[in-house]
Length: 313
Image 1 (spheres, helix red, strand yellow):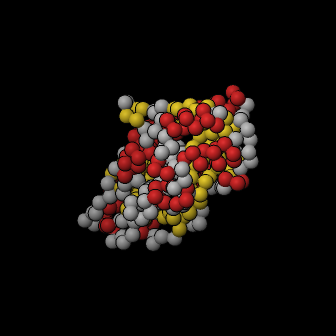
Image 2 (spheres, rainbow, N blue to C red):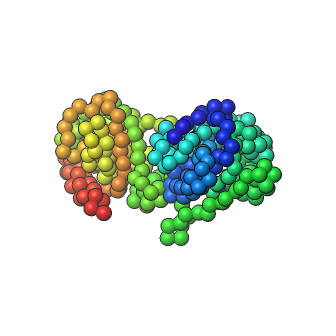
Image 3 (cartoon, rainbow, N blue to C red):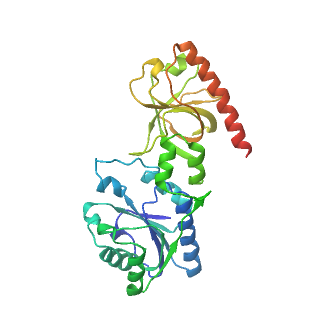
């Protein structure tokens, strides 16, 4: 998969099949669109191109008034897209100029003249361009004018509920990991670098790796304790994660830390990835460190059981 970071970088190729969107999360609905795009490009022996934006459009349009938490910052998004069979991804810098560009101009300059679109696959609710005028109806009209076909992909639902990035963000903010994973079609994940901590976990008998999370605006699930899978240089391990302020030990800042079951070793400065499997409990303050230690041991047992069940599915 070739990745281009500017419109003038992507080579023109007549007969390209493409789609466009922010694709935050690359959930099951997005995967349906991408799967159809790849299939159609194979049938037509053309190039499959996904166009996305960085930063997320809402970060530019809303600026600091209503910041958005991202399911997949750009680095993570590209990693996931790498495994979906695409030929090319064009990452367009999202600017105020792009916000104010008329959709007719965008289609002509980018899709037609720069990429070489012959077929446009898009989601049922996708809009773009000045005033969000670039909807399904307008795209159909522009397709006739520029001689490319348009295929609209309908929503994907689970139990009658339409999957969307907004709903998945809400689930994660509420700590509903199981449902979020179901809508994503994979386990929600964060990556980071292990940083120096204050060794409180080690003093309590449960050494933890404190994580500096990679990805600006990356969404952290609701504060609490989770059963997780952890990837490090030595392989994948089971464990538990805590997101929060650690009130029992007078924590001042939100931290993300993991305890790896049946592991000992120095992880400082290592790259680490955490997959969230199931929520165990809320973060809360205990009356003593002894009570905290007892609860952590119960959390450990619960996490091992939860992960055991997950592995057997």
